[in-house]
Amino acid sequence: MTMMQAVLGFTAVAAVLTAIPGLDTTLVLRTALVRGRRHGCAAMVGINLGSLTWGVAAAVGAAALLAASEVAYRLVTIAGALYMAYLGISMIMKSFRGRSSGIAEISAVPAAPWRSLVAGYGTNLLNPKIGVFYIATIPQFIPDGASPLAMGLLLASIHAALGMLWLGTIIVGAAAARRWLANARSLRIIDRVAGAVLIGFGAKLALDAR
Image (cartoon, rainbow, N blue to C red; front, side, top):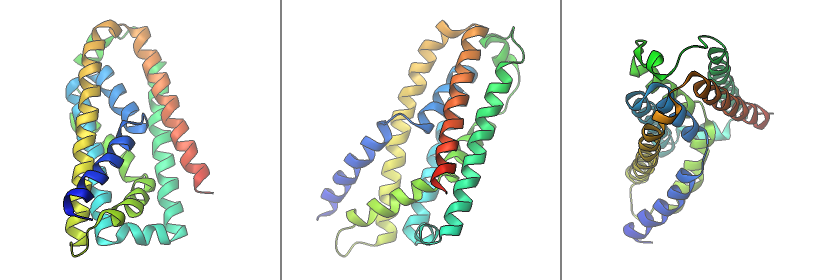
């Protein structure tokens, strides 16, 4: 396998994984719809920083140690499940408060974008399945003679770039749809649906840890 074949092969696999709707898409879409493009971009950056962190861990072998240790894997998985449940429950609870607030009122409330970045980073960092994905795929795309560390970082960067492209498209679409969802009822529905999805992902992680 040549370097070009390895890069193209991994890109194809990562593109399919990235385009499948999941936790990342849900979080960015909700953030962009409710808080606006700036917060959506912050969440997107956080998510992809989380992916890069796992990519580095996989490249240096830390993720392999996590995958080999059942106790460590369960601890990270449970922490991730609790974090996702916390985010989901918070969204649902907020949807029952401030019933008169629409997008204009929410946008007027000061909120630092770094909070959205941390939320995005946390969802990926506390999801050990991303590390397992890298462990399972990256070794298959390392050409003979190539540095595993350098190749791992390159492939993780490609995955992050694809994530930025896909989630950036989601943010643009959310910005266009935001004008149609500028009422309190729509925002409450968005928060409740997104919250339920996050709780669902958290429950699935918790079940996987058993």
